[in-house]
Image (cartoon, rainbow, N blue to C red; front, side, top):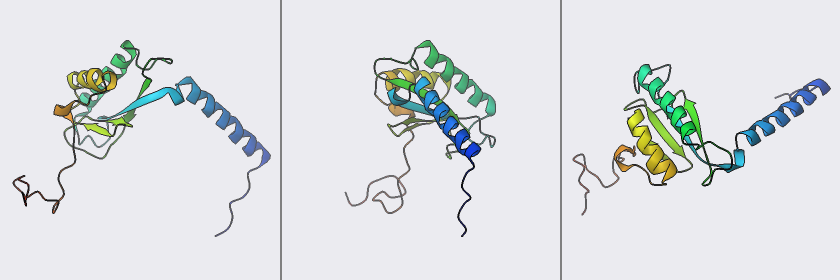
Length: 153
């Protein structure tokens, strides 16, 4: 395989400028102060997890509430909460779907009412909302039979 051509001086200068702009943008959004990030899937082109209108309503609500509550404000005690609209989180059922990072907590059925619970209890209070958590299904052979009873107990 041939080596990639070296960038020209103009390309290197542009890349260095782009990196500087990216670093300034990261600082502007509070980069290192972000404590949690919520990804919301519901406006996918595939529209398999929910209807587009449901996803759009959930996204608009999430943006509005995080702003109203000042959760994205730099210097906020407890860290900044960021949000990202994801095209697809590859669940494709029971949406809109949300993922809270770095907590690795997934949620299903994220209507505005459910998002309000997630915001209050999880993003502010630090306690996941159990009734809307999406947990992986047990794997075959993992000690659980098809009825859901644990085997070998």
